[in-house]
Image 1 (spheres, helix red, strand yellow):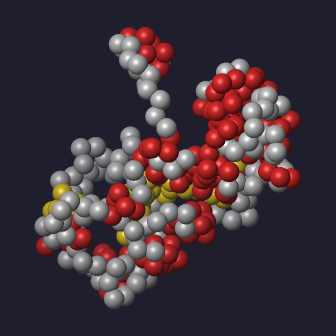
Image 2 (tube, rainbow, N blue to C red):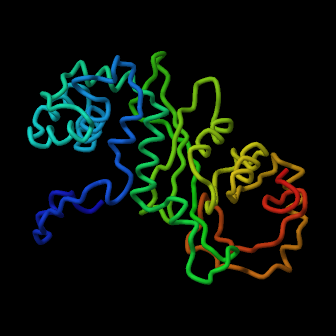
Image 3 (cartoon, one colour):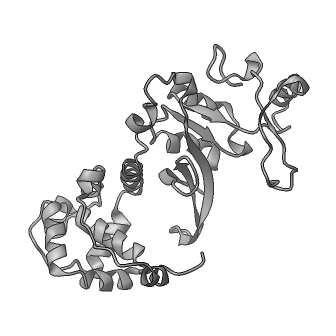
Length: 296
């Protein structure tokens, strides 16, 4: 990153700040947050869960780390903005939530429901909903319609530990046409006693896969994940290594030398491999995804 946001803002010409209602651009994030349970009786009569989650999220985006820092940031929110936030959350105006209230909401909130709410909001905000991706140009056939890419990837969350001191790992689905405009559409925690493979269906189950093509590393080249994507209307491109010997041999036996190049090789090699052109060949019946026989 060449320069900080403050430097860029200082060098850029001033522009008027325009307030755009969230509901005009996408589904309302507060409405989605309101559906997250946090275990409090009455969902927080003075401080609704939607308002507390929104304030905490804004504080973290602003760079706050830790409950004390979040509380201090929330305390500085102008009263007019705070009152509007509470009214939109369906509650009467109240003082800023205390550190204890913020802690209780964030620690007791349903993490899975929160992930789904944020993923849904981001997908709508980016315009990656089914209605947007499934509709092509007038007269465009379904077979030629561009598919939206969904990338499965697992990462360890830096500095995050569970109650037993184990590092938190997440499997996320990144949706979008390219890295610059992609959003995290869904994610789930990968438990200590499991791995990414069985969690793939849980993550992809949060996304409408119609008009989507899923990519992942070779760890996810398994029947269960491929069948889940196929059954839910999606496509997939998975790498095949020699640990899947039968499938590898079936693909390797195809007449690749006779297949025309469909795309030029990339400009740079990846993972130490030399650049290779892209070729497409109809797969053998044992490994087709969207034909009469499922992936195997």
